[in-house]
Length: 556
Image (cartoon, rainbow, N blue to C red):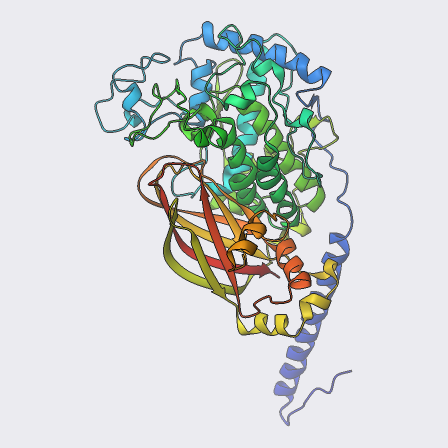
């Protein structure tokens, strides 16, 4: 029994006893609650009792079932392109425009006088096409200010889901599901084989307008039947997998998946990796031009936000992005919260197979995205109980601990290599000097993140590779650049709307493996600061980026 102080006044004694007992009870309750959270958070989630069990299975596009469903998709797209005009919500053009359509002043020059795919969307009287946008158009979450980023995964899940229902109706296949292209998985630890890296044949054979899955405005190597390049897959798809698996919070996972695997594949599919090096001009039928307003290559449909939703490969790509999200949810048992969705009230407006519009409130989005009617053929389910998710509550209590940061207004371009040091905090410097990190069990190490704030104008076309602590010696430096395990931390590319003013975008990289590998193996590692180098590859010669801020942090 604690030693409770007393006074000579009975009422004061009683108040003191009551106050101390209340404090003791509160501490006991908090300790009990913390223990309960810790116990429950280590247990698998309870079986999720859906309103009804999943009705459909989505198949990988190379499987027999996936190929059968591609034939149904082909039939539906033929009808959507040939039988329905662009102001019909079930038409191919209308569905693509829900994602986005050329709208801003830099984007509409090719369709100002004449839009061969949708004549009603041309002849703009103002400086943009916004005056002629139809209901639901320009609704995807890639706005210039990134205010809608939290909605990236939920919005696309419901967009794909509603398109899937329309195809099921138009193809007259009651069992249709959208296939996905398994070019990468969160379980991958090695380079996927060539079969997985090759775009399904149905998308380029035959390579003519009779094939509604074919689109000429794609990466030329893929339409020739070649697999995704090994270097691209290793650096831009496989490298981010470790970081994505290390993410503990939905917000971080959502934004990192968006800017890494999701964005990289968009840029590659539209010719932004291979064809930018060959300076190949790709005519983009949605923009009705092969050069943008600055005279730079427009590239294919998937490289550009306003044209991406018009390429049929968009649906295979986003099927896999949705599966990656489901894989992470199944592993972490963490979800987006209603409060996060309500913080930015974004429009969710889609169409049913009968042409009727469906609007979602944020509560309905929250209730729907974890209670879908499908599973994936590898057993991955998008569904999860969200009523009382203690792991999500705990994950959202994690806060950034800054280990080092610096502000810089340096540029990077074809002739301007970027290198900047980040001074470490005294506490982190002491950890490095005392060998705490070198001797610690790897399983108990925190995850280390690099955050890069970039300012750009237009739509950058270059590929920017990011490195940690490259050597100063030129010969050693060249060898280090080729060592992607020790020094390379990721790639910056831009699947963004074209901007006519300075626009800032944040990129995050997991540097845990690289930092720990350097701590273990490099004898002359600088324990006072880290050096970040960014090298440009391809893109217009005069294109530059401004690096505003760099920060290294962990969460605890």
